Length: 274
Image (tube, rainbow, N blue to C red; front, top):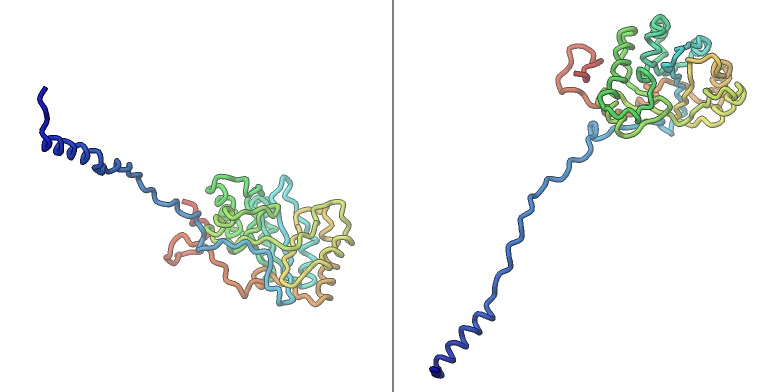
């Protein structure tokens, strides 16, 4: 067996040492494909307000009356008669189905300048439960079209049925050029067990500056008509000025979305629906 010289041993030991101590870079990590962050939920003009009241610094109250689309589409003319006889402005939220069932009534109501029209959807659904965005908008725009065809007026405010609304519905209403308008004082008039006196006491006592009261004009079984004269009298006695929603909110500009930046050649009624 051949013997190694000292020089060979030193060279061999150097190679082994170098191999053992050499730095070996770690394997390159797999490059993960960078995904763009999800865009934020759309908002209409950066906001879609849900209005419940006006300025708390002014002694004003808006009386509002819903004309709901129901199976019978009734009309309580006593409510309107009281408003006219007492010179009380009011905002009437019209259901599209109600309007089609009562076209002459709506045309008659349009003759009174103290009445302002709002949009109360076409068929009175639970709007947050309508998951198809296009159907939500159609509920609103069909009513816009009916009210415009019968009166020449275009509602600016949307009252959600049952007071049920969420940010998605408010955003879609804004795309349809409507401000969502709820209330801060439910009168309770759909409760057929409530008496006219109880209704008067509740509304007059609970009303606050800038308040929006919701009542109904589509059911004669409600105590609304019997209570309304004393409600009006009691609110005025407390020093409130009774106004439309438009007047109540005249100090505010509520943004809504337009289909385009171009000026329309005619009033925008159903322009959002393709």
